[in-house]
Structure formats: C-alpha cells, structure tokens
Image (cartoon, one colour):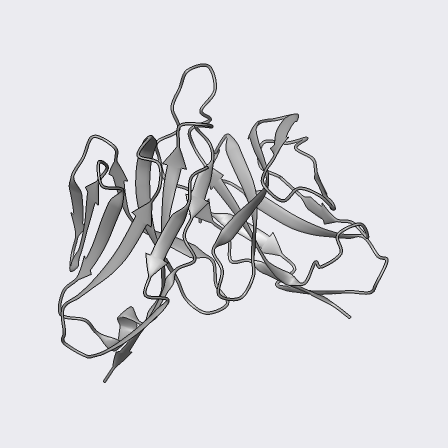
Length: 113
Length: 119
C-alpha cells in the first residue's frame, strides 16, 4: 500500500531564506508526483507536476525534484516571502488505479517578515 | 470563468440527518473526485467517477453516497450512517479518465471546499 510522508509537519523561517520541503513515498510504481499549495480554509492549488520519466520541474522560484528509485521528492523555494506561507502537500498518482492520488499530510510553512 | 464550484461553503448538520454537498465544474473534465480533510491530515479519497453514470469507492466510502448523472456535476451525500462527518470536504476534477488504457497523468483541479459541522 502506497504511503506518502512529509517531514517536518511545520516549518518557520525568516523572509529571504531558501528552503526545502521533503516528501517520501513507499512504492516507486507511480505515474507522477504533484506538489500543491493550500491556504487556510481553501482548496488546493497545483504548483508543479513531475511525470515519472522526469527528474525535476521548475516554476518561478519553485523547483521540484523526483527520485523514484529512492522514493523521494523535494520542493525548493528560493528567496522565500511572507506570501509563501501556506500548507504544502505532496501527492502521487499510483499504478494500482490510474485515477487515484495518494496525499501526504502536508508541511505547514510560515515565513517570518 | 472556468473552474470548480462547491456549495455551500459552510454546512451544519444535526444528528441523524442526511446532507448533500454540491460540486459543479465547467472545465469539461471527465473525472471527478471527493476528498475529506481532517485537521493536520492529508486528503483521503471518498469516491471518484471517471465517466458519467459510473463511480468507484475510495478509501473511506462508508456513510457516503454519490451520483454522476451529468458530466459537470458530482454531488456527495453524507448520510446518517457516517459517524464522524465533521470535516472539510474537497471536490476535484481532472481531464484524463485513466480508462481504456489511457493514463491520467494530468493535474487535478480543486474547488474551494465545504466545511461540514455536526451539531
């Protein structure tokens, strides 16, 4: 059974720092991995999607990497800003059912001004 | 504007009542999903539908029911059999269906959510 873990559960850093969020998954048989952002009381917004054949994806100050063999992904945020404060969730699309996505519990990020 | 709408934003239910959460999308997506989110936890899949008039149970379907009579609509009913329904409910859709050998590798789009509270 696929399990997705995100550590730490919460992170607080000063504005301007570069930071890395971690995601690990137990089964490397995945179609893709996605990073989402969730603001309090809101829905999810997709940030980056990495197909299983890819190693990384970039969007602005965000860079996500994927290492299927080790079951790990990282989300790198450069030059963090207070507006980056949110919960970041990692999710994998599994082979067992092409439409099923397994989510991690998220990392709650706080950027201090 | 294209997107997914959920209503109501807040919903209160008395013990023993059934309530229905609405989810509508105008993205022309084939697949739709319902998730439940509890504080400090990730999303758990309740039900999903890949095509009209067809749906499958997710990991926590007990106490819930759905229908998919139209492509753009996927309502979720929380029945009295659901013992702990207080949670944040999220609806999502995706263009790819994953059926007939087609792999659904594209992203899911989420609605704003409905917060359900049992009184």
